Image (cartoon, rainbow, N blue to C red):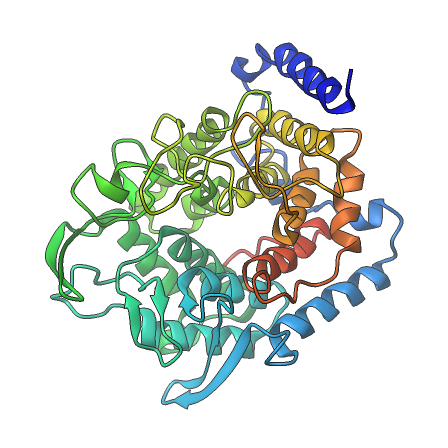
Length: 434
């Protein structure tokens, strides 16, 4: 029996043994705050557990940040200062491969900056996002959202939003409020977090012209399902509003919003956190643990014309295991997340920890056999929840890989690499607004 076949058999037996555990009642909680880092204020440091010193860990994080934010403009950095306006300095995060500025990257850049106490960089990114990406025209169907893609001169490639950008903007702003206090105008971080959070649930149905095309735009959340949508534009209950994206589900953020956001919506966000935890189990394959790029509301993979990998475990999907694992670290409300991490790590271990690919069918057939640094990073973050025997090998793979610098991988893999270094070192933390 070939080694690959043996591992697939092991995976099948492991999944079979867990069939009943995915439907059992959750373990008792000490309080509504769970048993994770939110309650205990203690964060796992996987690198310290593996024998690296805190000095080595701090140096690695500092070097990665220096390269990605202040390195060589041609080969290293993603962060580009571009002068200033009346509100202060401006800067953007560049998707190098596509030569555009994305709400995803801007919000990730802000989150990295607030985690590392880089207020100057945070403010410059936030100022740019509000100055160029934020739609503030009352007659515009996307009013209150951020255009998901801009040219490098700040003009839009698209004025419609992508839900993951708003989610990270909100939480980064709440953390900024906690770390630095609230300033005036655009730097009243909590007021802006509350405003965007209210918008993503309560955005009115508006139809009008968006770059020469008639668009109908509504909330980013399905009110009935208490679930994040792929996008808020399209026909009601159709198009991008007719399905979700498993990697957009961030229950660890929703729990915070249920405590810090506008009071009238707090019960909604608590319910959304529970919805997302259940959705992870529905979307992830019961043997491999792989989730699709896009998922129907019941977790089944979605097929669309514009993304040939929408039904596969692909580039969006890399983040899903990171999300459920961080939720486990922060809240420890759903032990099924440990089972999910064990499954996905078992699968990738069977593929060879140094040789697994980057895109797969959900049942584990390779579509792109080339390994990607971003997936190495998120598989390391899965070790935060995993009890798999090889969990340490996955975190060490992140430790040992260089900071992404290739043309194709510098942006997406670079941001995931940076965030997962913070996650795995226990330095991606909750900061509670005052």
